[in-house]
Every structure is written in structure tokens, then in C-alpha cells.
Amino acid sequence: MASAAEQLASNLNFGVFAKATDLKKRIWFTLAALVVYRLGTWIPLPGVDPHVLGELFKQNGGGILGMFDMLAGGALHRMTIFALNIMPYITASIIIQLMTSVIPSLEATKKEGEAGRKKINQYTRYLTLAIATVQAYGMAMGLESMSGPAGSAVYMESHLVFRFSAVCTLVGGTLFLMWLGEQITARGIGQGTSLIIMAGIVAELPAAIGSTLELGRTGALPVLVIIGILLMSILVIAFIVFLERAQRRIIVQYPKRQVGNKVFGGDSSHLPLKVNTSGVIPPIFASSVLLMPATVAQLSAQGGPEWLTSVAALMGHGQPLYVGMYVALIMFFAFFYTSVVFNPTETADNLKKHGGFIPGIRPGKNTADYLDYVLTRLTVVGAIYLAALSVLPEVLISKFSLPFYFGGTSLLIVVSVTMDTVTQIQSHLLAHQYEGLIKKSRLRGRR
Image 1 (cartoon, rainbow, N blue to C red):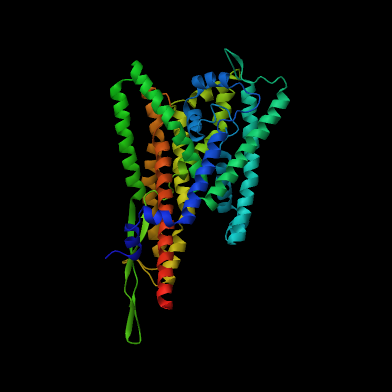
Image 2: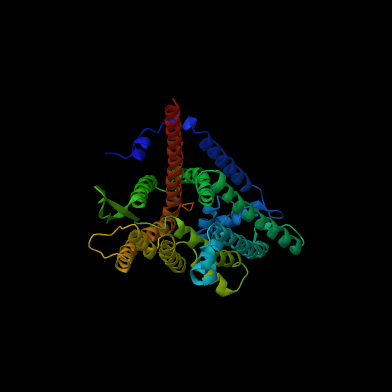
């Protein structure tokens, strides 16, 4: 028999959605915030010639720069006020989470509840400011050294004035996006940071599809290859949905207990462990960590020392250094973030407190060891799955010379964020229906 929540979910329709006033306000706020973000990706950085940059990016926009331009919604190759996007904030979050696991004082602060969470967020904001300043200054210096057939990428005569204005603008854009993401999470629907990244990816898809069809029309890209890429994208989306919903269900049994003449308990439930517990976080974290060295290397390669040119070449399409570093970081963050979101010892203690146990496993330490064993094996599968999806764009670009950065990482972000947002919308609709049922029961009781 279906549960009450499942029965309510089956009855969800547009009529219920129309009555959910709070949900509609949240959705409209989210859409308005994303429109503001997209407008900002077209406001150019002061003192930069966009035509020169466009030509230079066509020549050197492959590899990791192409991936970051995809995550930034095209703001990088247009060199706009949101060129750094929200990546410094993500990098700061990674560092703070790592420090929380290592430094006891930060770990104690995290466990202080709401007050501790506010302190951790404040530390993350300060670190975001520092990282964004360093990245913005490095980007400004890189832009000064870039020049094309039409001239220099920077037309300001005073380099000091350009660096100051560029750093202030880029850092201000990143801090604004950080604030905007927090507002979406608090007042909108979905996770703000993930939605901003997804909006940038989706906004660039029409231009990417158009450029691919143009290559097919001119004969530069075979029609069979285009059809194969389309079919592969559909299969990858289906595979992502299957793996994101896949889970290992561990049976949890609750013993029977007698109180007077009544018998309570004796029920069984399951503890769901997802194959990909870390979700879309590892590819985004790995991309953010690679941003600083790769951007500096590729932007400074022109006119720089020979070793820097060699490093920039190794960070190109499908090159061993880039692919190896990217896969290693994804594997690391998959295990790290899984350990952050799921603690086997804490879960085993909670089961023991409520009288639950896994059949055949003793409560306490043995249960924690068993959960850790199962979770480790699942995380290995999930990490391999994430790494394979993330390397897929490099293979497509190096083998078929696609004119855009497209593949598993972008599809993973879009599909995962969409599924999460839809789940939150369903939760709001269910809560609205529960409120309606409670109001009706109160009115009947008064009668």
C-alpha cells in the first residue's frame, strides 16, 4: 500500500501548483535572479578590446579554458565583469571544509549549530575575497601580455589603472554572484550556486548546437558524427539519471517490545546509500582547483619563458597532465565529500539509540565498519563514473575537433541540478497539500 506522501505526490497537478502562492514567488525570484546573472555576463570589463580577445580565445580557448568558459556561461571569452564567475567561492568552500576536518577548533565551531554555521560562512566569504583578488590580478597581468593581429587586448595606457580597475571589477562581480547564490538558496528554489553554474551552461547550448550544425552544413564535420554525438548525448543523459537514482538499500530491523498488553515495534525499513553520494560536487571542485594554475599558464604563455609554454601545452585537449590532474582531483573530492555528508559512526550510533540494527551485524562499531565498507565500495564506482563523464569532453574535442566544450560534465551538472530542483518543487507542493489537509480537518473539528 502506498504511503500518504506517495498518494499526495500522485495527485500533484497544475491546479495544486496554481494554489501554492509561496512556491510561485520563490520560482519567480529564482528566474529574476538568473536573468540578472545572464545580463552581467555581457557587461565588458573596462579597458579590454573584446574583438582582440575573441580572436585570441578562438586560438587558445581549448582545454581547461574552454571548460571554464562553459561553466561561466561565456563570460570568460567575452571577458565580462563575471569572468571569474563563482569559482573563487567554491574554491574557498573547499579549503574551509578541508580545514574543518583537520583543525579541531574549526570542527568545534561547525558543531555549534546555527551560530557556528554563520561563523564558517563568514570565514568562507573572507577567503573568497582573498582568492578572487589573487585570481583577478593574475588575469589582469595575463591580459596585458596578450596581443593579436588587431593590436593589444588592453587599450588603456596606464597598466596600473587597468590592473586596479580590473581587480575591483572582477572581485566585485564574484562577490555579487556569491551574494546572489545565497539569496536564491534562501528566498528562491534550489541550490543557488549550482543553479548559477547550470544557467551558464544552458545559455551557451544554442550557440554550441548552431556552430555544430554549421560545421555539418559546410562539410567540416561529417553528418554521421553529428548524429552519433546526438545519440550519445541521449544515452549519457539516461545513464546519468540511472546512476544518480541508483542506491544500495541496507535493511534495518527494529525489535518488538511489549508495553502492557500491546506490542510495539517489529518493523523493518531500509537505509539508502546512493552510488554517487557526492553528486555533482567533485567535478565542480576539481575544476575550481585547476582554474588558477591553468589560467595563469595559458594566459602568460605568450612571450613567457619556455617552461611556462610547455606547461600551457600540456593543459590542452586530452593532454596527459591535465587529464591526470583532473581525474585525480575528482577521485579525491568524491571520497572527501562523501565522508563529509555521511558519517558511518554517527549513523551507527543513531541506529543503536533508536533500537535499530542491521541483520547479521552487531550494533555499534561493527555496524559502523560495515557501513564504511559498503560506502567505500559504492564511492569507488561513483568516482569512476564521475571521472569517465568528465574526461568524455576531452576525447570528443581531441578526436572530432568539436567547436565547443561539451560532454559529460556539463550534462551531469544540468541533469543533477534539474533533478534536485524538481525534487524541491515537489516537496513544496507536498507541504502545501499537507497544510490544506490540516486546515480542512480543523474546520471539520470546529463544526
